[in-house]
Length: 196
Image: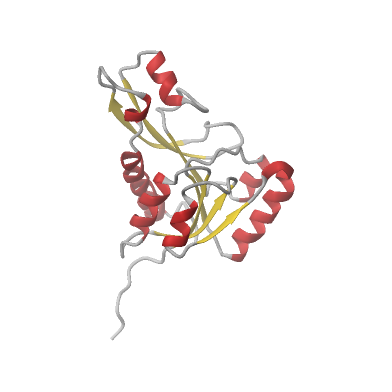
């Protein structure tokens, strides 16, 4: 008797620059039987990124690149992605803007988790800017990546209310963002936006 093993998982690479809080959530989710993804590769521009430890702990291959020669490095990364049969990329706190050429190679298959309610507060230091402008709400956005910074088609957002004594640190809710990202990947898989 053939045992049903669920969906064929989408081989995914996660690009990080820092602590890897969303990477941790994604890895945890990927281990669920019915998860539509598997995390097969971690890419970073920062050899000191704490998130790289998650690769070692979870036996996931990881690569670190110096982006001083950006286009050369991007071509190297594209070769590695092809070698590992990667079908989707998640930018999870990745602090490098990818070139138009790179994005076109994975058009419609690169997602970014951004810690604001886009189109507001594109770029860096979003939480502090939200507080400085005394916004009543903040949140996160999952969107497709295009050649313009944080401007790709929005897939889903989650709004959170900002309390009176909120700080830049307390606004940061990686688990909330991770949960929403799971839902996005499930949606993408069901709708066959990402072809395996």
